[in-house]
Image (cartoon, rainbow, N blue to C red):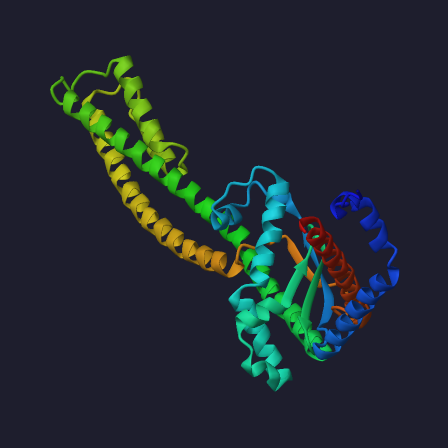
Length: 358
């Protein structure tokens, strides 16, 4: 009696794979159909164009550690020149895509072509790209369906970056001399306060000495220690001021009686009071100067936009932007062919799976 043969026992995955791979005309058909669909799609949806130009961005980080302006703007203390340089590059990139820069770019574009009247900042931002690794050559690009408008966009953007960045750098250049003025004012305030404190201490000591000496006999010469202490108090009040020299030289001689010093001490106290009034006026003057220079510094800080005074932003050339298709019809056909090949592979796997599950 003849036995029934189970077809599944005769089916081999290896043989099936070998069979389908030898059906190359089918593979070619899938690839050709995919390529044709990709080619037709590139005609129905035309490729956009990419316009590219460049900028030179340079930076001398010799003031990286002491640049108080950048640290205040970034709210970061830069420990080394590399961090400083990287932050500067990032800041310029952020500014290039900021609303202020892009709004200025749109205003330029609207003067060229009415097409840009309906374009918003967010739309323009999606068209634009930057490519950079560090200081040096920066590539700017714009992508649009029209080659002419792509070129317009990247050229206007380049001009806007140049204008605004150079204005910010010019403001940053004002910050260093303003910072030096603030430091000088701070030093003047410190010296003025120290001088006021010294005069106040000398005044109190002289008044105390005068009160104590009033209880002592005035018709006897001063002891050497007392005269030496009085001389030191006078020298402490005088400091290095030449206006005090005549008064110091007018100190009574060692043999003078105690009462002879009282008039001289009164002259010292008057001199101290006069100088204290002058120092008080100087304090107010320095405070006004500090407020004025601080306001100028803060204004320049805002206008500087975080860019360093030692940064350079320039065109690399005056050539028109280079315009290239973002994708070609041949590339679309190639991608379509690859998709066709993948489709054939999926179809084959599905077919084999169904045979195994029967």
